[in-house]
Length: 266
Length: 234
Image 1: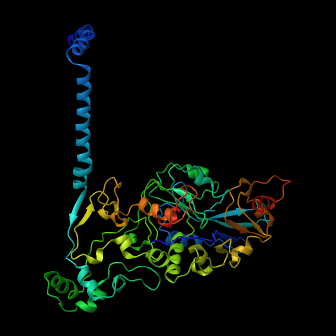
Image 2 (image 1 turned 90 degrees about the vertical axis):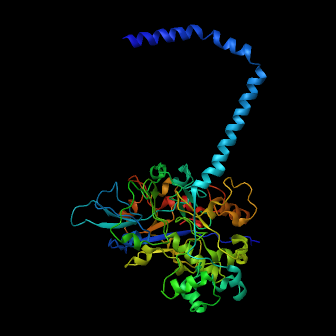
Image 3 (image 1 turned 120 degrees about the vertical axis):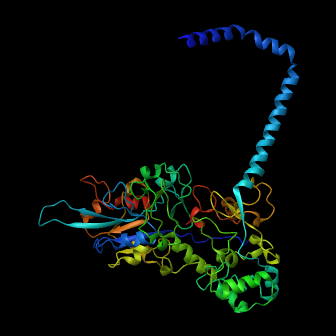
């Protein structure tokens, strides 16, 4: 009746964001909101209320002119692997509303399962999770323009970046139809990756040697945010500037950057 | 003031009387008989609750809706080459589901068989260029993603495995809509408890999907050790 489902090569989707290339234009944020039916508020400056699956932060080296430097840092969900899929949010969810897939490495959020306790938001060290304090209110007619591939959220649930998982679902559907098991790199790309005019965001399977992210994650400029917490995030950042890499974690003055990843990773 | 005095008087009287009362009762009724009547009333209560829960409530919960006109799968199945002739895959792997007017029009530009239902279809829909507002029995909630390609092409399952012998049916059954959720009854299934399920097509709940996936060896969820949530959710 059914053919057994064998997955020989578990995928581990991840992202490498080159901060040397990012200009902070915010196209990724716009693309993300449009792609994922993210509701927006009249006053988006109220950060307790606004929802941004992908948020661009502005970093500064805090030095006076002429040494002032800034750096923009886009922050999606890190899709932490933790140790064997025990990412901070997945471990604390009492409703099994968030889950880690060993097949894709993606941390899912099921809105109809979530009952809004917000433990995951407290557990997430990246502030990647957002709570819907209100039902979404779309400008007249806009609800007709929402993407049917992404389920809209309701009041009282938590939401976050899904690495545009619906695109993976559709790509796999096409692959199955064409009797293929695997995807080409360009068949599954997130909306932010496609929108970035600087090409700063690279997305792909971290386990696949043929994908660009596989090499980039081992770049000497690479670092991850708050690596020493052991969250084992799947979003890597590249920066040639030491002060930027130092802001990726809470370093003491005598501590060097780039040590933690080697400890966790190898 | 007077009422309070009366109340206190009553309660004092009651307190005095109370210790004696149960003794008299127990003298009159045998212990076995008292136990029996408790069991009988429990069974009657349970039966009433079950009748309400399993028969009255579902009858109130689902409202029967008629389809725009009747349709015979049997008649069509004899004329075309299998289910895929009308329920086909698009080139991008998505499934077309219930065919749209353009496909029916290939044969039904004019009345063919002469049944009243076909006349309704041709005169009211084809000639007026109106899509038929079919009610979809298997329409899942908004949060569900289902890939026909994954089941039909990858897992090589037959249509009948999940849809049953619908191709042999001569008429459409009434569409039963859950008045609270708006979903079709085919999702939860006729059986409220879901315990005596004999065929896959009897219900299409999340647990039905999860059980089948688990059987097929898909266990990619860290939380549940079943298949990951994001396989069928979106």
